Length: 113
Length: 113
Image (cartoon, rainbow over all chains, first blue to last red; front, side):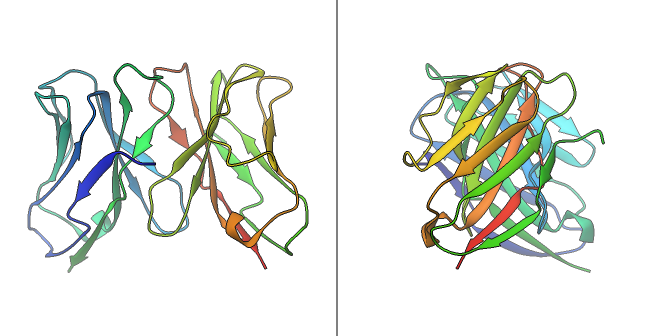
């Protein structure tokens, strides 16, 4: 079963607001990935993190690999309507295989124009 | 195309029937993965191929599920004697190598009546 706890489960915000979501795990991860999924489509990779403490940006998105290696967060600044979708954290458990991704249950983001 | 291609996009069939789902990975990607996504959940790992061989099939739920990748490119996921509980979106992903980020197709939505 899945080992990642992702929160919040859903968010409803106004356009222009900043958003923060996070993932925690009872296991140590050696890679964290953040994906976005739109209805009827597959997950699209947003950001990949490989080192504890790493902070990486991709446009208005910023993600960090937690120091404990058991958590990660994703921030979206100045949200726009096209940010709507489901955001998933995923990663590879340390000491396990580096190909079997474990996913969170997702955060559903709704942006009100 | 440049991305992972999955066909069919939708498949509706009766309980007990046999189905085949096809995945065409990104050109040059040696690693290929199958995941299953149920409503409201993140994708769950099924099987991983490195080249032509199934390196890990530990996620396949039972022996009704089988996958092949005979030439190290296109893969087919096969489900025998389908059950209503098999209804889900089946996602395929590929990566340049096992420790590189996985890129997903749009999935096949399988409905078993």
